[in-house]
Length: 188
Image (cartoon, rainbow, N blue to C red; front, side, top):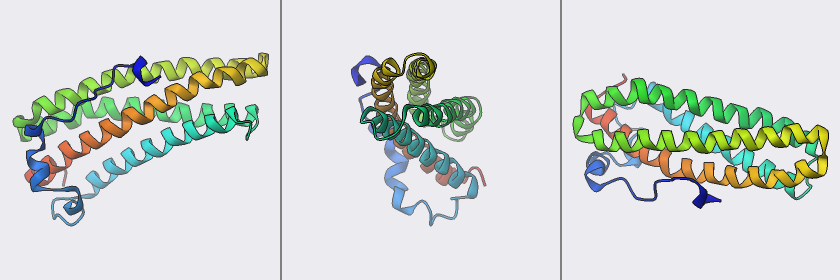
């Protein structure tokens, strides 16, 4: 399923990691330029990782018949809907506010920001696929429980793709953005 989607497989170019070498992850919290806004942004990323995992784990549970289909579709609607809508809102804010702020502070990293914006566009397609597949399972759950159970497999593949996508994208985004914030003392 992962090969169905366009997903960047390459690492962030070395020239985009210059500040990360100067401000490695294990030093971020102690840096005087690390403020609550940055902590909140990183917290949102952690929430996305957890919710994406929850959707995948719930789907595995329904496929293994460890939870009832009715319970699953309620959880899928809640967690899947929150994941999709919050990711869209978060990425829109980053593309239109956050990334321009980072670019204005240090244009050397615009190529990395462009890669991250392309990731957002690519992820939007995966999220739309998730919405379509999840909605199909939810509709079928009241019409044909056996078919809904079968269709949950398609949701699982998409959930795996979202998790893989977020693993690469969010780490790269953090490794690029936080060092710029620390170096230029932004978002204080």
